[in-house]
Picture (cartoon, rainbow, N blue to C red):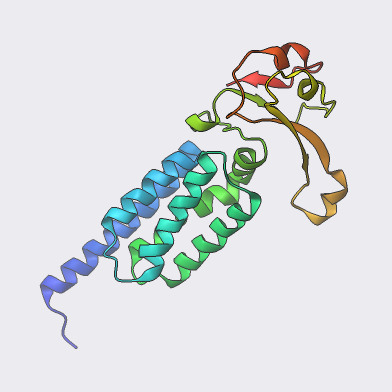
Length: 205
């Protein structure tokens, strides 16, 4: 079967665009880690460029964007993170064109190498990179917090909550610990928690 020269040029250009986008996405992940905001910006670009002919690209990337925005706002749960990962793999496997197939790459790469940062957004309500404005203010460093609950008792605004954090891996389930978590929507940054914490686990971002 003969392929017209003009069609062949378009095919080559399409492959070049997809390859370029993949390389850009990999570099993007190395620079920003798991911060949801820049990944959401890439998905917004995909939404603008999508032809809309296939459901995985048209609707799947829209739902991925909604989940990333939910994580960035500190409103997500761990089930949302699992849904984000399943959705990303589904789009990668079922989208019809290269653009749709590579759209989930930044999220999948960041989940592979920086999953602990996503978990920090969800469990600790903090953005390790300081990029999510909704998660500004005070935060408790989980690796330092001893779960004494002194900050919870002393907070005059009931802005600090106790949360049991359970490791993802089955072999670590017994290592679940109670930690303090700052609710940014209630916190007025009075600083009492920082003064009362005996191990200096609370910081202002």
